[in-house]
Image (cartoon, rainbow, N blue to C red):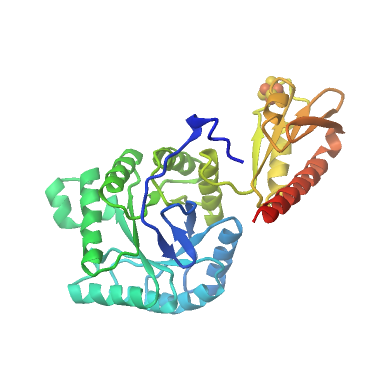
Length: 373
Ligand code: SF4
């Protein structure tokens, strides 16, 4: 339960954006911030792509993007959409035909820049296909592929040129009376991204898709994204996010959720609070947390668990968590339930026991949630 009314320093005031639909997922307005990822299989390899989409959805992805570079991929997209448990965004670059094919194949959204797909007739055809098939559009401005005329005007990628590029694409959609769009202004540089996003957030009420592009590998990309996206989200900017990592899409989803969880913007699964451990630990904190992370992956109910090595911080952390364990002496520790010391448990049975306690608590919380609905 949020206690932000008594902890105002935790409040984040989200920018008010228009709401659009990406398939059955609402994006913008007061909708939860959606977590996205992108497949990295060959789109023509339908079974591999569907498996990746399903794994990402299982990890919590609300929306998944798939590249559509050629006609064969458009054909494969139809099957992928049919098998996918979540809405699919088709990633299109330059080819207006791919845009039309993707809309016809059932994509929930096209990631396409209308200014880059040719003359007005082509633009109109893509917009018509999107409209006819209930398909929204994401304008995806990227510092690495800005329009030549704008780069000549500004000299180099900068926040202003990214905002201007975004507004040019927006104008094309609006001139065609198409308003079901969201926008991103990504750069691999955190400062450039953050400034461009702040600029576009002021210039439009369109929902904003956040991302730091080409962020890097699992560790460096996670840190870069946490800083870039974290700061923007903290400012209230962002309606959907994608963490770009040179890693499995499932990792992108996990990192995306962790960023949202850290800011209290979305909750899913068990939020484990654990100490780094030191010579005072009453059990092996690091190994225990590793094991629990795996054993509790199936829990989707938002809840908290503290795993703390000793009484220095254990009882204090346990006060604020649903389930807690604090190391003690003589090979056992204390289990806390709803913040209160409940019973002792030996270290060698503790992992199985904590899993049981968490499952029990999750079932209780689910039942309470159902009763409240
Ligand atoms: S809670 Fe205890 S075991 Fe954990 S880091 Fe602090 S002093 Fe060390």
